[in-house]
Length: 224
Image (cartoon, rainbow, N blue to C red; front, top):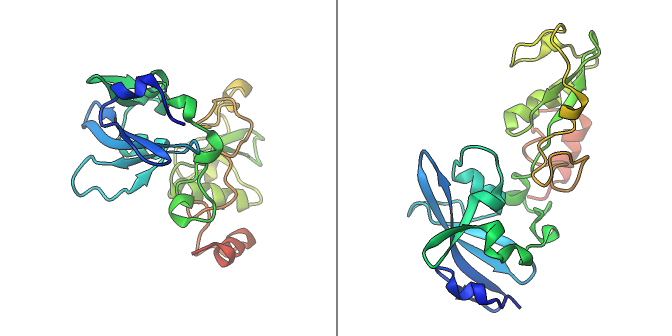
């Protein structure tokens, strides 16, 4: 398992009983190279130990987390943005040959682990204005954005004017249907909902100070 002629040319190659480890990185135009050690397990799981600084305490990161941690500008495409070195040359993951060992199911965060649960991805959601009947997009990338959407969806007659950011009025055009289909899934832009982008509850989108049944049930039942 994990035997390939290309591997011997990769910098930092180290073999374990159930994994190989190689040097990897992700480059930010502003901050430069973020270096890490990529472990590829026989199970198909990919994890990166970040070595960007001596005191970096990020621990083991998924590919998406490492890309985000590196402050990489532009589109988030870890297959192209994360690289390994072969004979001293940076090679993007998609060209390295390593992705044939990648298994999506082995890289889905474990819902029972709070350290992983907090990183769950949340796709964009829409709420229809009760006045103009137009659907408005809500981004859910941060805890603050999740709270804004959470409170808005709980409001029985939400209106465009209730939006606390991105000043918008009912007169503004609604997004085209083709644009609405793109909701930020890290796997595929036009995804209709999958385990990568649909969250069923995590510490980012559930709140200790909210008394709604969804949040109360989550906080009472979530693993510590």
